[in-house]
Length: 326
Image (cartoon, rainbow, N blue to C red; front, side):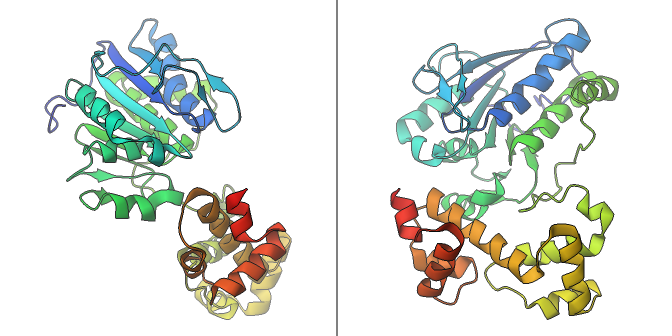
């Protein structure tokens, strides 16, 4: 794999770029589409093949996405296949599928590629292959803490996407679309990138360093920045929740005015919204990690495992341990 920026794929060029895409079962169909469709649209607009991609899977069988839809692949991932860009698209369970044998095959393939990338949880394979050591990277916000702990030699950022030399990583479907638009813009120019975005009526392009939020606020930020600020404060203090009075003070409202704001916009009190935010985060940890319940309780702001369990049952109807086993 090329080092530095001398062989960067993010430079003006109309030469065809061969892209090998390794798709894991458990990934999002939107991540696959966000990777491939902007390149397909760029080819259509250019009138010729600028991006030439091949989809493969670890075992050669179709990858089954989270929606149950299969992704047809050309075959099994083989490290000897030649590609300019090698991408891994992962999702639930990819961290466990990135076994040493597959990581070694990926690392071997990366040696002859000009760039490598991890889409959403695909970054786990890059990390297992040692391709993130000494580099900046990101992954989906749900995994950021565990990802950082697993790869201490990497500089893990909460950015939407990260490009560090020949290594690129993205946090999810929308950031991947932005990353692909950036690639199109760098190689073919801003006008082509605008045309690609217009094909999908896509107007919310973000820059790489924009943070990944837990809650995608959409128009809320424009409708009332104080509501958006309050939600961001709740996100930032999941482990040590602020009181509603403290949040109201920080956004310049009285506690009563904050309640009225949440009631108008979201139909619930700020306290109820904060609790739901923490419980949803806890449910993801219960289902997607092997962390002890006491650790999950602490990470989501509950004073004890028993308090956490009672709130969890009230919200989801089953204890967290039973949900994990199920």
